[in-house]
Amino acid sequence: MTKTPSNELTRRKFLSRSSTALGASAFGPFILRGQNLNGKINLAAIGAGGKGSSDTDNSARCGANVVALCDVDLNTLRSRGQKYPGAALYQDFRKMLEKEKSIDAVTVSTPDHMHAVAGVMAMKMGKHAYVQKPLTQSVYEARLMRKVAKEQKV
Image 1 (cartoon, rainbow, N blue to C red):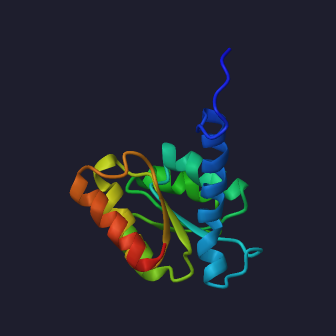
Image 2: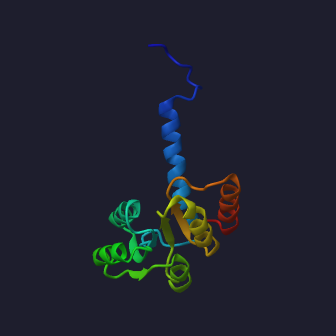
């Protein structure tokens, strides 16, 4: 095994620095806005079935308060609503975002072509957004999401 110079970026150093940067960026907005880090995040799920199911469950397991669920499939919505009885249920994410003022963040686990649409709308309303891959369908959408996130500081 060959030794690498100490200033060379190894895989281990990259992962370590990336993890640190990711952690700082995740909590930065809450610190800068003076929000209580001990308070629970009010989370809404846009897309509650399939991958949205595990996204919601994992977020709740990490301490998020699931306040709203949205899915176009009424059977999925009812089923997931039983797991989160305190969550409001919607079939239209636009109505959910307009009515539910307590939402801090959303997960977007919809069909791919809706990722940017839902993510941009949530961010324009000042909500943090976790969007499943692929983030967007085009370079234009990616640039728009970056612009909105920067403007809204989310």
